Amino acid sequence: MLLFTPGPTPVPEEVRMAMAGPTIHHRTPEFEAIFKKARERLMRLFGMDECVVLASSGTGAMEACVTNLCRRKALTVNAGKFGERFGKIVEAFGLGHVELKYAWDTPADVEDIKAALADDPDIDALCIQISESAGGLRHPVEEIAAVVKAVNPDIMVIADGITAVGVEPIDVTHIDALVAGSQKALMLPPGMAMIGLSDAAVKKIGEGNGYYFNLADEIKKQQKNTTAYTAPTTLIIGLEKVLEMIEKQGYEEFYRKTRARALATRAALEAIGCQLYPKAPALSMSAVFDEEANMVRLILKTEFGVNIAGGQEHLKGKLFRINQMGLIPVYESAWVVNAVEWAFDRMDRRPYDGMASKVFNEVYYANENA
Image 1 (cartoon, rainbow, N blue to C red):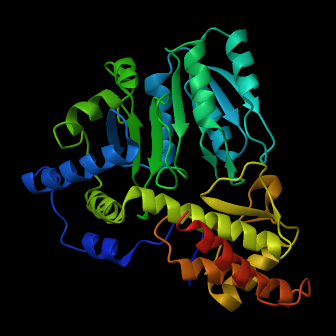
Image 2 (tube, helix red, strand yellow; image 1 turned 60 degrees about the vertical axis):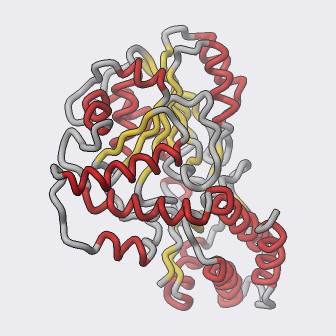
């Protein structure tokens, strides 16, 4: 079965083998040496001043950023389940909250951000997704972050990059906290989150806030190549291996291949009549609006050995999403769009003629070396 859900993503065999060794204790020089290498590679991935690793899902890292970097009021952007989640976290801790809400296919508007900041000088943090995976949407986060800092450089920009880090180069010039998750483009099992931090964020964190998610405690410990609490040792071993593999290929090539797969998948789906959902598609996945999405997914899984994701809430049964994150062999992506075309044939919607494969290959190889 080919796993093409936008998280969890398949774990490469080399990584599985690296994690299959004997369990080691996290308070030992042996683990500290592994953690040191993983941390150095992670810093290069983020391109930021500091980073921390947490034994949690990405939601834990989102919470840690909110509780450590927002003191008064947060501005959150809700264009899907995960933007909505930022708002719920803010309210759970009794912080002030301003929300900008958009349809799940619509990116945040820079002018709306400016207006919200002008209306409320108490806002000291912005929380936004880079890639909102509920609808496969890409927000213009880099542009928004630059505007926020121009209004007030002390406002903390918290960017959820869980389905963006490791997918494309991200300009972190104006970003203070960048969240990543193990089970997305980093191709690991679920259970670990990572945060890249700016120097300004580290200063704002100060002595930190909370207990388990106190980022000040973690920064102090992780700068010494250990963790405040029990480390996810196996996942950190896997992380070091994944980042070694990506660095061996080179980030430029890694991002280029991901982009080529995304553009090829998008073009192939449109060529066979699919309606792409978001107005600003992310490179991490292709989201297709389809009233018969459940049937498409069922046929792909039972007849063609492909597991893709559906939609949530009002899009349940009306959306299917195909992953493009990670070190995916190009022939697997080609097979997925070919399987979608075969599913349409089975559903008497379109006779199969190989158009998806043809367009995928043409677009992929036009962009793979671009």
